[in-house]
Length: 359
Image (cartoon, rainbow, N blue to C red; front, side):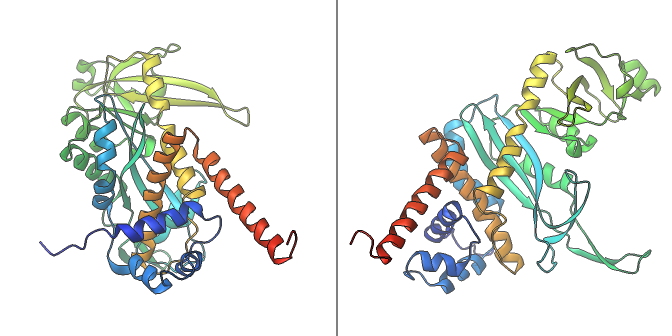
């Protein structure tokens, strides 16, 4: 195996603390200035470009905490987010991706994360930057396009398999509609774990094994749902039975929404199934925090490696902020507010000193 440089913990800790502490763009020069040039901006730039930090490195850093908090009923939660980079040149990680929350393509870095969640906390377990590493010419438009050699569902299964190989304790895998593929479900149940996935209303199901064997299927939305009760059935292409519940809710605009949630654990009641799926919200909070509190979108880095390493440092900064949050019993917003007030007080005091006030 080729020699792999160790993690530069001194620089990673400095840089990740800088991401947590900063309220504006984060640059090598900015960190050097903050440290009164005790560390040059060239050294910080070398740290960001010296070697590529990966999900394997993240696991090495979070493993001690995982081992302390993991439980048999732990959750492995998956989702992706896009760090928008509208003004940065395209490359294999900065590309056009479809943003489901906006219903359109946006330019940026698409990050798939797997987080570990139980009553003891939330820990980022693994991540992948979705690479659009294959260039081609669109035959309809004649324009140059990019596509991925590996799709997000394959990354999903890779992270799941790696978590098993690392002997992480968990029972359920949670994800939204975009990761509820037959292949993902099969991989999970084949490894004696359970999935809890949102699924589309037009997914085909059979109400009995006999119907499945005869090829008699119907859409999920046509199932005879009763309030808070599950319907046991079979997915087309999946051998084991599943339980599905329909949840009706009111959106912010007062429109009615319907969510279908499926699980391979047919022993769960409807209430238990919904309670477990609602914990998927933890990864939405994680996405919000890495964008708002750990500088994911604040770096003007220019190369694939420095851009990827900045993302890695942001996820590690989230891990540090989460540990501090648990120990101080303050949420991420409250912690950052305290830092902001302290910074404002220092700035105000320095201004008064320069003005000679109180001298």
